[in-house]
Image (cartoon, each protein chain N blue to C red):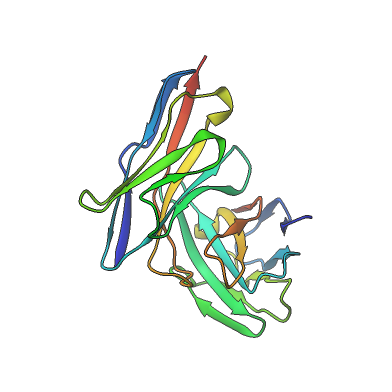
Length: 112
Length: 114
């Protein structure tokens, strides 16, 4: 039982490059979310999805795109990376009937 | 609106002594409250949750927390610290069931002194 799997674990980008952070869960959870973690600020919600084909913005959505074509996958896209997007990114999922988030191990992203 | 304040950014205790991590919240409705733990280079793991049932909540690894509405607090305690408890702890508030817009505290780093 893998739970929530994030790839890659580490990534270095140059300003202006694009990339996709992958998130997959094998628990058949309806809800999935992306957070960023910055020093001294806790976790902040970027985007979330309540089911395949449905996404919504969180607290800090600018510069990020998401889509949810399947229940299992919820990729986060950076179209033009900026140094301000240097952070640790966490993906989480939860079942609709239970208010408990399950987190992946995170992706550490540096934008130079 | 909701917010969470973790009153200590860093707590150090000796192994075998009690742990107290403090959390105050504000919410305009009855909240759900959580404590998560993050070990170095790992994801977040749920320790315990409060969802308007018993005010004293027991979690994993001997941790517990008490919801005090009059004090708007949800402090995390453990009677005897273990070296493996060294980690970052986050207090989290959720406005209601099914809302994804969790609000995280800024975290408390717990150091255990041998």
